[in-house]
Length: 116
Ligand code: 5GP
Ligand code: ZN
Image (cartoon, rainbow, N blue to C red; front, side):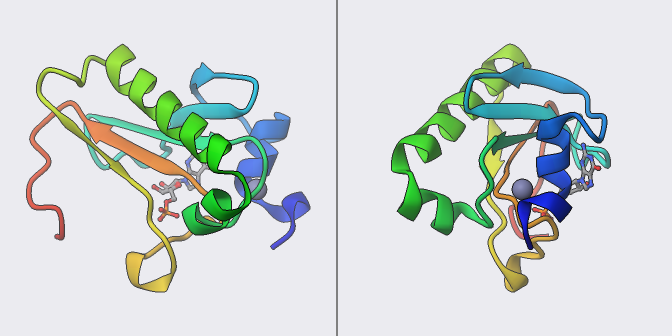
């Protein structure tokens, strides 16, 4: 997978539309196209890394920026009082489908068991 055929790189470039909810110099957050909860936002680094392990090894400060952005999204979406999840699917067993690292921010309703 190169950045030219990566779906989320195309969203960063503006070539594919997305409902953006948060942006910094290095990160972007947008609503998931098939939401699995009342609030379902994806938070990505603008730079392409396949998964959270690659990101954290290459640029731990950027990994921190993704987590900071996810926390700010959770607060802006009103998720702090009742709680929420931040999930990084990583590799085949997780069901990861898009190989541009993304944090799922899920909340806004009871989420049920973590593995379902
Ligand atoms: P993964 O399974 O890789 O952790 O999650 C990929 C997520 O990206 C899925 O929840 C899926 O609904 C979402 N997704 C796939 N294509 C698009 C798209 O074109 N736009 C947006 N906003 N989300 C997408
Ligand atoms: Zn990408």
